[in-house]
Each structure stands twice: as C-alpha cells, then as structure tokens.
Image (cartoon, rainbow, N blue to C red; front, side, top):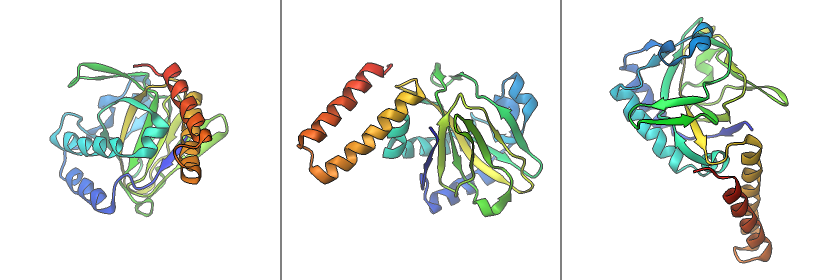
Length: 227
C-alpha cells in the first residue's frame, strides 16, 4: 500500500530544515548501506549522530505522532530515527530492497523495517529526475511530491531513485516497525478506519453501525497486533 501524505511539514518548517541542513556536514551515503546497496547507491547523507540530524529528526517524530493519516496507515510501534539524504546531479539509487532489521544505537534496540517513508524537502521544480519508483503488485508507481509531503510504502518493495539530471533532491527517510506486520492487514485496517470516520460523521458515535465497525476494527487489531 503506497500512501501520499500531504503537508507533513509546513512551508516554514521546510525552510527551517533546508537552512539547518545547508550548514550541516554531508558524507558518503553508503555509511548506512548494506553490501548490495553500496554497489547501487550514490548520494550524500548527514551523519545520523550529528546535532543537525538529531534536531530535525525529533521534529519529524513529533509531526508523525500528531499525524492521523500516518498513524492510521502505518500503526507504528517503533520508528527508526529519521535520516537525511541528498542526490546531486548524476546521483541515484538503483533497484534494491531495504534491510529487514535496523539497529538504533541510542536506544540499544532493533527495529524491524515493515514500512519505508520518504519526506520530501525539495520542490519538484528544483530538480529533474530523482523520482522514487516503487514496484508493487500493480506495477511501478512513481513518487515526486511537493516539499513537506511524504510517501509511505512497504519496506519489502523493490524500489529505486532515478538519477538526478538537474539540481538537487533533499529528503528525510526512515523506517517503521508496525504493530501489524502484514501490509495487507494494515491496508484493511486503514480502509476500515476511514469508513468508521465517515460513518461517525454521518451517523454519530452511538449508531449501531458505527459501534459495530469500531468493535470489529479493535478486535482485528487486537488479533494481529504485536507489541
């Protein structure tokens, strides 16, 4: 399930991120790559232990916690601290699948990467190329969204970033371990959650149909959730 979440960051917040990242150190993006990914990737990255990455990562985590669409679609249990990358002209990332497990040194904890997210920090008009192309059961889907928007998709998807041919593409990226492991189950719960919201608006919170849908949602979540 690929989800486009608009305006996770405001225009002013994007400008702040750009200013902070503009003064940060950028290193070879392969500092976080596995062996195979290192052969496919050419980009730059802000070191994950840097003050800039920690400051901006905390802002992203606060925004995610308050974002109803993200929480409905992902059902997060643990979020890997956001990282920040950049693709300048000639850089790209060939087809790959993200590592299944990521270790968070600061928390001494491993995160299973069920869901991948990219939060765009460059306006699409500022660069050519740089599309995030994701392969799923329905074929290829391309994401190149407005600065401040985010795309969320299953981490087991084969995906790539096409080479940038003009300008520079900046983004935050991270992974989430969901309470519900299977993408198809998360998609079902997300659709049900949206239906419950619509039913509440039309019928009110105490209507039998609303109570029945809500009960079924929570019983399915109780059945599938891993804590």
